[in-house]
Length: 208
Image (cartoon, rainbow, N blue to C red; front, side):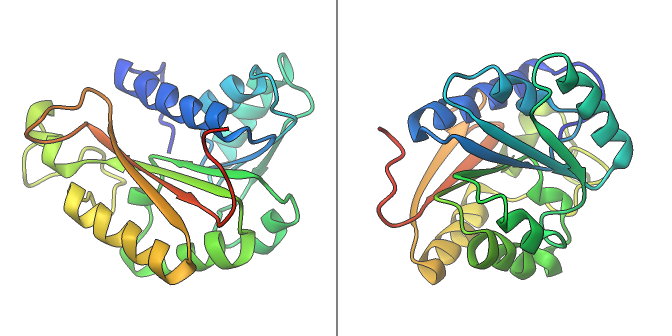
């Protein structure tokens, strides 16, 4: 979920990490699920090889802001109001090569995670699915009390072990390859401020 206001250095670092994956994947059709004000969409629109973009977000105000932002640089990009869970069938018609959930999953109620898994990996079924989420082990470094989450809209925040367990379970159930990485100012003891999972469909190459 891309938040209001100018991007922070950590958010810029997350965007940089995502863009590295985009370039390595060679994806031409990209779905940004939880696109917010269009921070990632704007970068993608300026990326050689990216031919079609679709952003979705449940907040209509953010969608309108993203549309206005993209109009000047990529009038061909699409932005819609909706959620990846409830709109999965329609989003599957877009047939993305890559789906990105950038700091989105932690805004979803844990009880809805099976529906998210189904939407992403049974309905949309892109070649690559990239998910980033905060690393709860890093919160002390950010001055976040252990009784709170980083943002009031977060429904949970996972440790690296918790995120890895969920991602490995998804990969096993769906027959996907998985790459995990610590991103944003990683430290040996606690990992990065955020963590990333890249799910790769059989036969897809994320390093071409």
